[in-house]
Image (cartoon, rainbow, N blue to C red; front, side, top):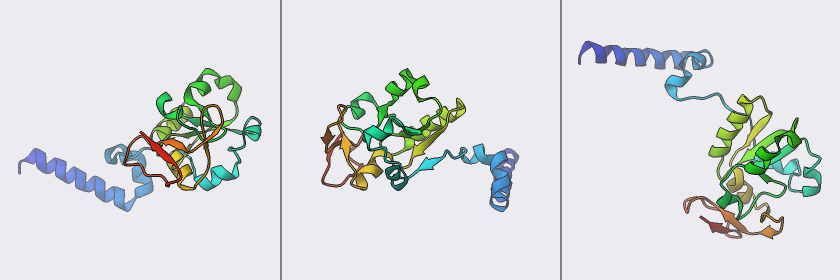
Length: 170
């Protein structure tokens, strides 16, 4: 082992030791070394259900706006009731000023990224953990873009499972 390799290995060992011993303090200094990003606020399916966002009449007056950040192909299959698409939100951001954006996608990855972007822009936003897959696994209703009930759900991939009462589309 040459000196350069030894120095790198020793540095990594020290960084891991510091991170293990002082995780809270070390994250600020070493977070990027370990691929960590600051966590974004999250909402879970039971919390979202309690907000009653699935009642379109109440969603308009809500302190929240539910935003589907999936592709047009995905959101054209179904949405969580009361949701709008990312394109609709971005075209009319002033209409939703002061409201907390609850972003969702298929599983939560894309919506977490979007939530992070919104927070950087100074907006209030939370990520719906588990997103539409979690919503379906809780056997909650979905609607088509016209607001009519449907059982079709774009799951992005065959690997993403939903209860048998839904028809998976990918």
